[in-house]
Length: 367
Image (tube, rainbow, N blue to C red; front, side):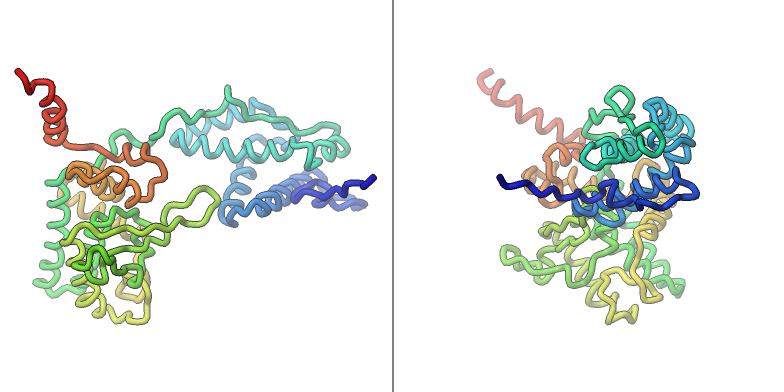
């Protein structure tokens, strides 16, 4: 009879606890060992360092809030913590659910018999960890969209005003002979690219010049026929997702081509790969995009519900109004599910009335 060889799981208690050593603060040493074990278990699953570190910080904050050790945590602690996140910190439901999910994963790791943390706590402290996150004391994911209900896309008129204003800042800087003319031109083009390819702020910030390429099916766009987005929104714990976005707006292609060929070289950053460079030779950051957007929006007295993401939102809405296939739009913006694209679709009243007329036409054709 062949005896099976047992292989220790990454994160198991006996791998993290030092035997034969008397700890000055055994409770704190146990917590540190638990977190090391959880880190090892997550690393074995291929999670990113940033994700693991963020989860560890959250568990330490929860530990500090309860003022109890993990083997003494109870469901009531989760209730109190969730109430503070809602009533005191006013966090969004999606954020609270994410935090609860991290605590759930940590406590489930501790109570999983394969890792041995329960017996280790029994031996050391005479008690053991229990599950504290349940359906009745955590937020369920019931809706596809949990963002601000006031968030919306630009209307076509609002977007035109915004882009025209961005262009006007270039002319004003040139006429006043201020130093900001190049930066104003860069930012005006940047917002056109956000709309023209339906991008997020981070995706836009991390674009390099070489990310544009040719599309054999759209030769009229030259080397700007497609855009390789390398830093798309990642799933939790995973690397950024890549996607290729096909160019569909000729005016946006003209704008970025003019910027790359005639304006960007004047920044004196020929060796820098970034598409959007600063006067000091760096890369424009997402926070800087946000600051410029807010300045333009407020100067135009546009609604504060409009945020940088509203430009990407507008890309989906306006293509939908123009009759572009929904599946194509979904691929362009990098949504895995059509329901995500549907959330972004806020078509105008004119579009809805036209669609209604088309839908009713067959019914009244014989009357």
